[in-house]
Image (tube, rainbow, N blue to C red):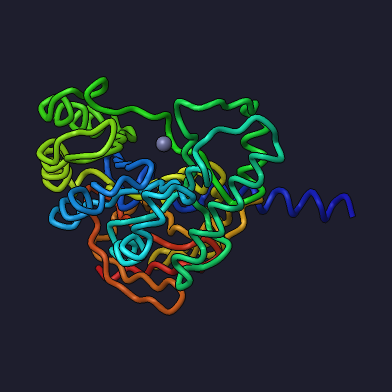
Length: 315
Ligand SMILES: [Zn+2]
């Protein structure tokens, strides 16, 4: 038995030594950075001014409505319609935005807001990962560890810390420079808004348009993402294990697993990079078949966790 075990370990080590050089890219499609736009409170001016700009430039935004607020309920039908856009994702901002002082209160606020989001988009899977934004300017007596546990229990994940113009990136030129820095330093960046061309803590529509235009111009290098997709990808990337199941001179087969993460919730395809001297590759991933060209000795391809990817050399 000891001998057998020793042999098994030796074989695995030998396989590892000869295994294909595959890694998970930091950003989807091997891009150089990521960028998120957030819009808080469900301000009516976001319907009037922000969403048309996002659609014009094909830039996604995450919207965090106050689901119990009168100004939101009065326009709920319009928000349901707006949320059908591929550039509009809804997030959880608690139901009342009046703050939270006990864990039970937090549970209820999260659940009530989630129930409204579920009802607004019955076509989307449930449960699913939803981005969460702590309401600002109100009492918040919840320890970070407790918040995380409560969020986890309701498939919520906290967004990056709020930063908004004019205090952050005062001008469009500042925002453009910030976006360029995100690409140069391979980081995620974000700008967060309330009113656009009206309502409260407002920024001009022209400012958002400048930012969206810039983002559109660098989309080949920057991943423009809803907040929840960013959270999915980073969580998956942190735990992803690539298992090479077969490797020959002309073929590599592999699967990605996500450890303890639930693949039904964490379902964003990971982008992998295979170092190879192949020039063209046929990829079979589940039922999907595609042809890929290598660049700089690397083939990049996206595959969901648990789906076997088979790469075959074409030339
Ligand atoms: Zn808010």
